Length: 130
Ligand code: ZN
Image (cartoon, rainbow, N blue to C red; front, side, top):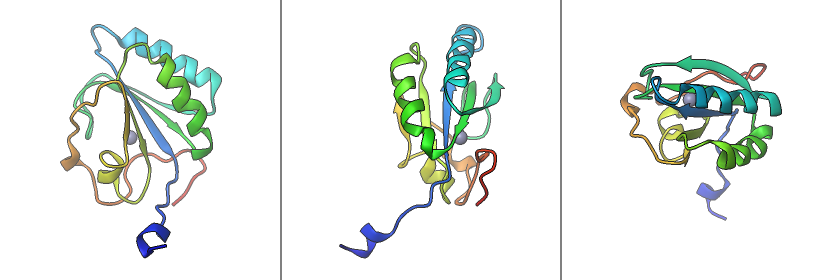
């Protein structure tokens, strides 16, 4: 095994950003988000009706611990109701978290990666400390 393969990335949780159009699909995002909040151990960080940080359009942020990944992501794959969703980890490199480490459900949206630090960025799940 090479050194590169042995080196692991410490991930402390995930964000799912559910993108929506404030004029057209906010209620859809509210419905999807409410269902995820009811079914799984997640934190809903709130609806942002405009651009924020690397996100060029409105989105609602769902935060969860690694143990919930399989349940949350498999649910969103089947129940995102046409909304585009970014799922990214929370490692020590926020730029990679939002690019090479990220997965998309639906269509990828170009992100403003220049707004992100080459370090930890974004809210961690409650009770998790670096
Ligand atoms: Zn995020």
